[in-house]
Image 1 (cartoon, rainbow, N blue to C red):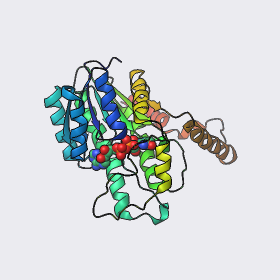
Image 2 (spheres, helix red, strand yellow):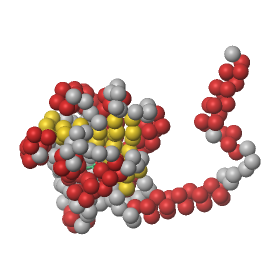
Image 3 (cartoon, rainbow, N blue to C red):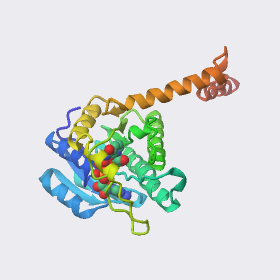
Length: 286
Ligand SMILES: NC(=O)c1ccc[n+]([C@@H]2O[C@H](COP(=O)([O-])OP(=O)(O)OC[C@H]3O[C@@H](n4cnc5c(N)ncnc54)[C@H](O)[C@@H]3O)[C@@H](O)[C@H]2O)c1
């Protein structure tokens, strides 16, 4: 894909990967709308990009705000070719000690907000003759990484992977879907402000040191756009992340070999085949 002249929207664009995506897209000749919950850095990020960029404050956990963002994108850019459902937050700590309000907050952004953004912009783009491409930001945490202290975040990123896979299966012919699964990128993810109703984050020096060693947001954005241009579904960036997925697959394969090995005719419980069979029976009875 040639990005010149393309119209893009990016959520979580005031910082980190989202901001770098906006910069890289504008450098390639695209026009962008940057969206974020944090107004001051959002405005600054858009102003740095000049006339090719507009901005709108949007809390992605508010579906009506995402619909208002789509109306703004339609009005400002006259349509949308690329939508990056990128906004996300993190929390850490033992999974069994998580506080319900914090779990709701994180799922409201990472899952519901990603769904709202992907759904609203898929509907907008599907109605255009040229269609479009939606990119949902997952993580290496979508793929099998079992990092202690990240249970709720990991669950949200698995949910994003599931959303993306089914949205790909459902997509009309003019829509492409990708899921971005980066490893660690040096951003402000572990430092973002939280709602006042939630307790202050514990100072976590280790995660600050880990983030500081991450891939640069610019490199992550460049790799992301290369994946989009190539029409990849899984957009991956950090080679080691594959080990987590392979470890999970090997454990699963061994579990099936022990407990539910394949037998002739085992596909009788395969739901898509069942549905096709039931439909064929209905057709022949009609
Ligand atoms: N940094 C990493 O190591 C890493 C790795 C894998 C995946 N990711 C994912 O990449 C995405 C971007 O994260 P980042 O690392 O650039 O972090 P970041 O904190 O630098 O950027 C995230 C942006 O999202 C915004 N945001 C937070 N809540 C929002 C809401 N309700 N509505 C709209 N915007 C909101 C923040 O204000 C911030 O500007 C996230 O989905 C994150 O989970 C990051």
